[in-house]
Length: 217
Image (cartoon, rainbow, N blue to C red; front, side, top):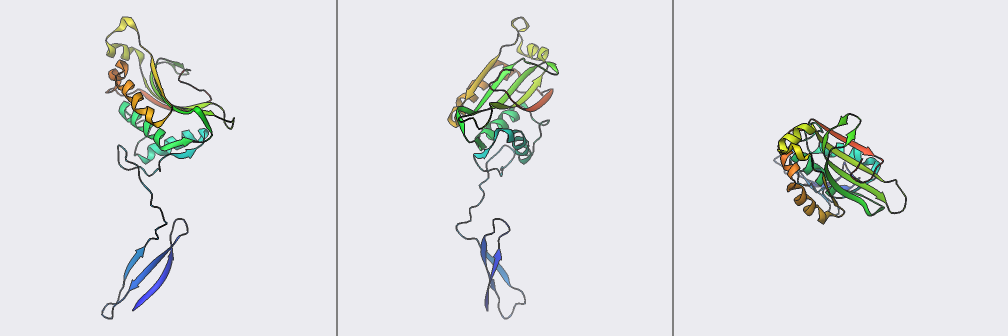
């Protein structure tokens, strides 16, 4: 005997058909669920620590970027404190690939890195920073940025570079479109300062959403 029943899908309110098949010699039935063709399955993104469940290029507002990045790290099984230099690079790049900002100008949804020695509220330190840069095309939001900084004692970096008399070189590079990320990564991985710190543990890791634009300040 065949009985038809309708179940409601837990997500999205979709209906699915359940076909219960029974035979006279069995006291229990086997349940087959057939998902309708129009129900789109979630497509996980590959990540360093396994698949991420964040769909590609989801929209966000600039002021949501701090919260979204923290949630993004949690989905990868990471925290700010756990990030190494390569981890920080990979997380920052994938976050840019995964989230977009609507109503941005041609240079209003970019990615950049900077090796520099800025002065911040806790004093001067050496910083490898990754930036999301936001600028509106129609004034719907103010210029701003999300900064992920991996911080080191600048005297240590001078020693690792092996050239204390020439000081610390500064460098940066921008990407405004997804295809530009390959060139940015190539530039960074050939940067002498990046090579000097790639296997070193940062003293601190910071994430800040700031009313600034660009890699300076």
